[in-house]
Image (cartoon, rainbow, N blue to C red; front, side, top):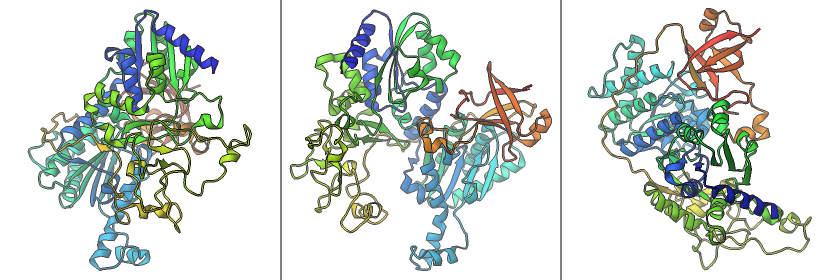
Length: 610
């Protein structure tokens, strides 16, 4: 459309105006989009879009996975664990699929007991009678109660430094060579011994942690436990939850953090290009407004965010269902995602394109490649740590029996009706130059005994089976791996023997101050899902949490509205008294409407609202 050409011309004029050009990527954008932005602005002017704290925490996770001896756990191996320690992570809120796998791991004791008695595990009633509620040991240490506590053997409610101290104590109990924890109270020391005994006696121990506590010491403590366990038991695995879909992917870029880049942009008039990132969810509005006051802001996104609202030019980026790209998941596995449908096929006025495609057009004009395989190759060349991502899925030239692979099953209907408002005549389906998939039911669909590559299986269907049940037809064995192996390619080998982390934090001071700890909501804390109406209908109103003992000390009642001062910011929230919250902690909700980003670990002051 003409307006798109006008916007592209405006952006090219801004990029060529002689002012500094900065690029802000995103951990929710594809590797190809981040790489294309870095190529456009130059490595020295590119930020991953993560705050300094996020960048440090995710970088620490990447370091642990790369240099630690324990393998990164997959969802399948999590379910097989027979002893688990969850250190600092509310997994149902930050990584719900991992939470489900942990529940299955706890219930795995019933499976073992059935096997000992030669009772098939599918006999659910018999399995329940045999198990009598017995579970594999799961220990959970978090600042507040979680919805996984019902299957935990023991729980600990503590602030992040004390959770880290518990982890360091467990590692020392497993291996005296690990650093000891000074001034550890007797109760925590006894709990550490019980956890260590359970992990030591397991065949497949698992340590789960992540960035949820916003404290690197918690991640380091988890790494120490995994190292101490791995020496006598190589089956030990570790699972580190990260904030967003491509957090580990952008960590490979080793780019500037968001604060550093914005500080540079604030010094002189500049052009700032933001790709799929709402800056106002990461830093305070004051910081963002100050940094961008004299900047021309160009944004590529698929959501109407606060950052989009203040931009001088906006290009409509494709979401993951509308475009192609590559992400790196929590275990370090590069996985390709493919366009589900072509929006322009149903509405010719739609001008949506992947961010990497827009950036290619901006930089190269008529000479733009606009090809996924080319974008992947450029990404591998620009970031050596990402070499190998091309193997995450077959390229666009791949064919089976000379045909592409059908995106739609044989039973698809309504193709003509879908475009009837435009034209009753059925036109040719969109041709996809970026993948080995066809935008129709024509092509290989897996029903004729031909196995599609695991990374190119768009749907599950087999004659006589409902769709979910037919997955067993695509597996090497029921409940096993896909035939042809797991999709994607593992970028992080692990298995190295790094030294123990030695930075044991001091216990949280009992000086009457309140320490900010993040509280995550299953519905609402994740940025994109929180925009969906069904999720919004289930989101609770944002409230600040206090332990009743702390509330009594400050003379604050449940439901009272107070002002919370943190690093010059003031939040006004209603108080919720929570006996499950660790004493000395003020729980601040993450990601909910009206709650700006608040640094975890900061000291907070409370003021009653009139």
